[in-house]
Length: 500
Image (cartoon, rainbow, N blue to C red; front, side, top):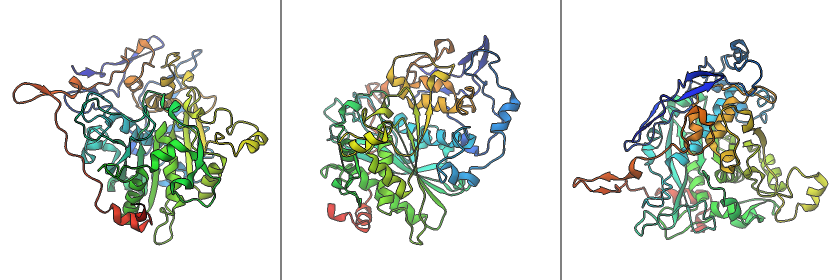
């Protein structure tokens, strides 16, 4: 049965407003056409969502004049994209919140959310652990064609690693792969969107963990030199969490999908795209949520440390990471090395989320400097990298009080908090047309009087269809492509061919 959210109502201060941006959600054999933010205009404009304040006393509505000061100044991403990507470490852009930065954060975050929306989590599907769409159909199938990107390559990892709550496997004997999981993609902006962005943008999006947080317990919580897995680094004291490193560098030569490591897949594809567009203005943006955030930071480091972002004419392509609800990745030496390399990282977190507090529960960037100095050689002494934007779900009048830790970690909920955040001490005011009903897509976080059912995103008949004989069956999906034939050539150019 198709579920429609087009009649969802937002009841605010005893007044009921139809949610203007909701679209009907169809489940008739296609991906639900979920309404996302319409941020691709790249210039702020008049907004129509009900303005909801986080303060219950006084008026619940901000004045239009007050909102105008923040959101109606005509600016283009093409003019300020370097600032949005951290050339000045986002100084003056987070408090108060820059409206274009907010819009771009949500846009890139949606590209990480797409990894969840496209991933087959169903253990009763023989395609469990894969992407439900082909690269060519990816954004169209997710109602994200207006983002203006084209997927150039899928990323796979071997599941022969001790992260059972991250990898998903089918219960059936006949499966698409016995040892691979789809963990993300590489995409590039098309010509039209590149003009609006002011450059050609290459995006790497990593899948994380959508609900279960048990993967944190799977971590060995053990730091090891990043160079121990053949990633170049001039300093042997630069260390990262061993599980993240193994996930990024391990491979299975007997598997057609992960015979190259995730690292090799990323480096060769980025090199290929940089060669194609080397005469244009370029940016490299890496994004991920949860464990995917750790992989985003690790791959950004790798790309710059290897010098892959330096073009033939000696121009350095800026590399930025937009991290959502990510854990700590390495030690303080890793943080310092990232700063030396000029990798820009903006981390968006919910202050009630436990994942950004892990690993390094006792020894981290928040303890006194002298104690951290004494503990820096310990294998469990961690430090966050980059700049943090901390949000608090208790400021949103849409969200209920809950002890469910997965709600505080949910990516759609984080977008909602971004949409309402204007700076420290400012009222919570939704700034765009993003539908709050998306919060409950995979959680039970919205207050009940908004009449949005929890966990509402489902698939018709769990993907079962009737064949010509009228029998119900799981349909065959298009065959996934093998790894590109030119991978070996690019590995040789990168000096990695000897590893095969």
